[in-house]
Image (cartoon, rainbow, N blue to C red; front, side):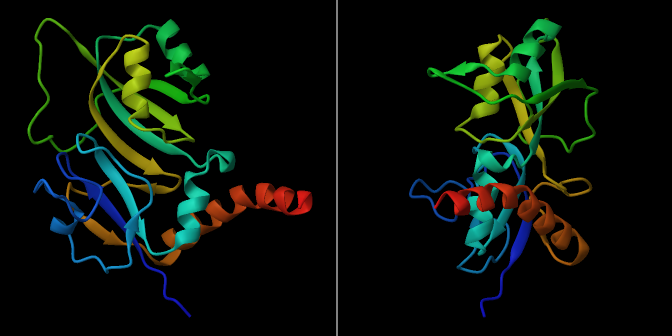
Length: 207
């Protein structure tokens, strides 16, 4: 029986969410001696930071990334300017990106979070304030958060994925890797399975 492995990674800025790169850029391989059969579930862009889940459990990959199952991913986005309620409501209802509307999202203003400094730091413009938003999605299109905030007039300057369901980067440092096991792993797998179960049963009945 195959032994499944699960790893939580705090991906730093400037690291690719893959294990090789023909341009010599930094990859996940530089962070930890991961087994060869382990791969990221989804991706974070090179200029984004935060939580990545790596596993050799292919079932988790399909269940977690399908928006039909409504699995939450929470991001903290530092945006240029101060979004008004109208802009926040547009983000909550969904915005148009290349002719397609994003699914509804949970969006709220937050105080500046206690995060490790980004290296290098973001570009600061003294005459333009910045604001932090918590944005929770159930889908993961390419550069979605950045495109969403830009669509309502507030470009994202820094983006950190804080949470995937009950998995969080709290108290982790950039570049840190944790082997996921025990109660936390059990609770995560329970959430994934419980959210997916009604849809899987419905699809089975249709066939």
